[in-house]
Length: 457
Image (cartoon, rainbow, N blue to C red; front, side, top):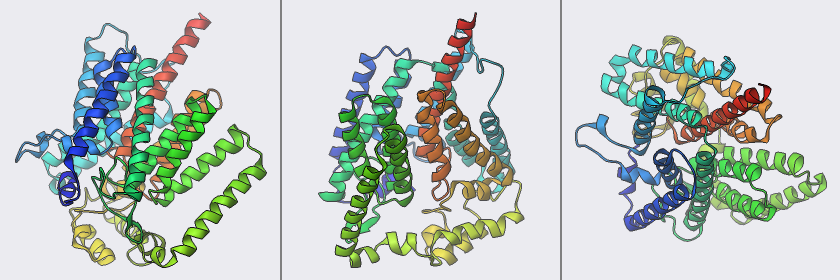
């Protein structure tokens, strides 16, 4: 989807609001960098700005007419910036570069590298379908995940990581407040993307993102930061409440499920709230939901949330998944290369009866795992799935030893579960968030391992 074209369809949108927000975000990013002792001010400034602006920064895309390969999008800018950083750090830095401290590479990392190797093979195997120029575009999107991860790992700089965390919290605060305004006052306020209905004529809250599920996942990530990094309980509860409101107003079911799981773990096992109080709070929340349902029953039953998401009709996601499983045996090794094929077109047209879905202009398979399988083949799918599973177990083990790894553990859990019903693959926004946190976790572990080895000496 071309975000810019979608945006300008809405006459209610005021571009001046976006540019004011960009100026505010740039000022905040500059302030955070100026106050920090980060050794990597240039890279962290732009990463902070990226986190503060969500998908709104798509407006800042620099386009060269007729040359899509040279279109400078925010994600592509991050790819180029961190690629230059890696080259400078590895080839021209006087520092000794160690990618491991004990000579061992965790299995999740092995499957990640295997994924990228097989993905590249799959792309070139489907060159007749994809086209050479599009292959390079796809590789730049995919490899952004890897270059961000490796760059933040090599930084291993607490001051830089602190700026990233603050940027996430400030960005989430803005996104929640903007989402509340979109839901209660002006549905087009800083709205850049889709306008899915919540109920009646009320839109779901997108915040600073172009889809509601990206907004909710970003807010959940911010909640994780608050839970494990904030010491002041009053501020902690206020931010958790604000971000939770933003998640609720997204009307995204999987996000609700993940949020409930996260808060249950937090209040039951970390804050150790008495279980009867937790049950009472849950019953009060259920009573509020039932009251809203009774009052707005007709509106709710006629929304897309019920008709498209909760029903078992032919237009549901079951049809997408069936398409993949019934046809992957035709091209098991390298997949179909993308949406530009007869199988995708005919099945999507039959399922949705919408040309936009059938031609791939909008929509998708709505599962990161099955999307990977259909587009790139079973070997790539297996590596992707193993990476998602193994990274959760790896950081769960580290989490029991050090609270620092709680954040990457829960974000790995979001990535694992979220990909069941959403496409949260590496080029997507949530994939970028995951790369950032994996890089921070790997850099933090590297520092700990080095300090332990020095202590043992």
